Image (cartoon, rainbow, N blue to C red):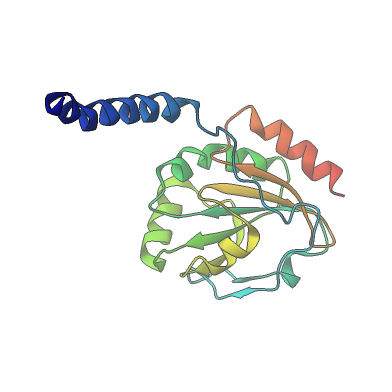
Length: 174
């Protein structure tokens, strides 16, 4: 009887390990969406992230529809989406950005290496504005309507097939 009791912890461990192994690929697959979609941007003012570019504020994002890209120079998917941001800019989209936990030198190097589609870049050193927007990571792009409301959220890197979708969302936001 005592020998059987010795096997109970091992059996419990094996059952729990199997349960965890099964749950990992079957867990929640959804993305975290901002609760601010359809609502005004939170109030914020960010200093310029690099010399020669203006900073960013919620009041400066009103007037006409635009894209607000949340990025970091240290972010590999941010570099991967750079050609698509250039396509959006070439198609007439105004793109502003929030640089997350970055330095002016690293941002300037990133822009020199991958292009600069941004009209303004705000410096969000503590990710406070990113979190206030409901952004769950980088890169992330928001469509902002002319009244300063979040009309659409694109989570992750922008791929070629996302460019027409974002342009249509900008058109809808007019």
